[in-house]
Image (cartoon, rainbow, N blue to C red; front, side):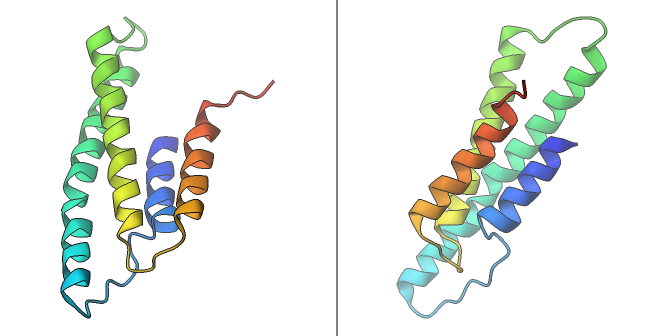
Length: 116
C-alpha cells in the first residue's frame, strides 16, 4: 500500500505529471511526445511491481523471493523511477533540475532509511 502512495505522490507532486502541457512550437510538441511515451514504461513498471508485491505477500509464509524474482522487482522499481524522472523533466510545469533531484533523492532514501 505504501508503494502505491509513494508512486502517486511522486507522480502528482514530485514530477508534476498532471500539469498542463502547453504546445506553442515544434520543440514543445517533441517534449510533449516524450512526456506521453514516458508513461508506457511507468505503466509497465507499475504492473510488474504489483505482481512482484503480490508474490511477496502470498509467498511470505512459505519461501522468500528467488534472486531472479528480486532482480525483476528491483528492475520494475528502477523502471518506475526512471519514467517518473523523465515525466518530471518534460512536465509542462517545469521546475528546476535541482528541485527534481532533491525530491527524488528524498523520496527514494526515505523508504530505505531505518528508524532506530
